[in-house]
Each structure stands twice: as structure tokens, then as C-alpha cells.
Length: 187
Image (cartoon, rainbow, N blue to C red):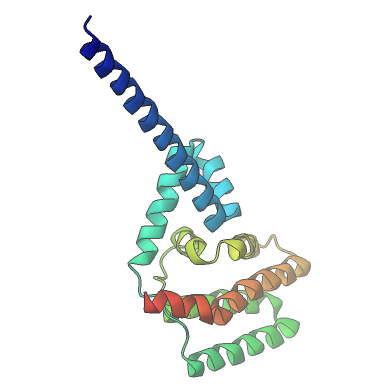
């Protein structure tokens, strides 16, 4: 083999090694970025899919889907109206814990819709919320699970109280996230 041939093979080997190294670097960087953005939802999605690439592709798709929405901050009048509605739902909990759970869920749907999230089935709402609010998504899931058990007559008053606490956490996040929502609306 000639010297030129050996040099070409050496250059190709270096290019392949650099390419593989760059690919590994960018994959690790993507994993780190998605894990930081989605928090516990990253781990949950990874566990459900059983495959890092599938999980990360799913999270990327969620992110792209939500970027197409027109998520916006609440207008002050809407925010005040929702806060007042929430106070009424919480006050009704004392006399009607079972009824107030459904009202809390409905109010959250209204807040999401007003902010610009589509209000489809629960799983899709959860996936959409996970993009901007991953840390409170588990609260939403827990509250929803309790609401489902309640519909089957399997939730105690203490369970319903926990559901209200979980709903409140998401509610406060959605109505109080003015800075992030403003940044998303400006983008």
C-alpha cells in the first residue's frame, strides 16, 4: 500500500473517531438538557418506554407540539376571576368534598384553555403540561387518580383533601407563572 493510501486511511479513521465522539457528546448533551427540562417526567417517560432514544424522541415531540400552541399569560382580569373561583371551590370543599373535586378539575381545564393549552383527554393534557410545568405534573396525575377512584366510590375524604392539595399546586403554578408565560408569548 502506498503512503498516500495509508494517509487516506488514517484520515478516514480520524474522521470516523471524531464523528463518533461528536455523536456521543451531542447525545449526552441532549439527554442532560431533556432531563433538566422535564425533571421527574424524563425518568417516568424513560421507564415507560424502556428505551432512552424512544423516551427522548417522545419528549422532543411534546416540546415541538407545545411550541406550536399560543401559550400566553393570563390577563389580570382572568387571573383574578380564576383566583376567586378557586377560593369558592376550596370553600365548598368543607361542605361538599366530593363535588368540589370535579369543580377543581374543571377549573384547571378552564385555566389551561385560557392559557392556550388544548384541553383534550387527560393523558394529552398531562403531556402538554409536562413541557412547561414538569415539577407539578405528578401532583396533577395524583389528583386525577384520586378523582377516578372517587368516581368509583373508592376515595376517602382524606384522599379528596389530598387531591385538592395536588390540584391547588398545579393551579398556583398555572396562574402564577407570568414570567415564563410572558417569555413564551414573546417568542
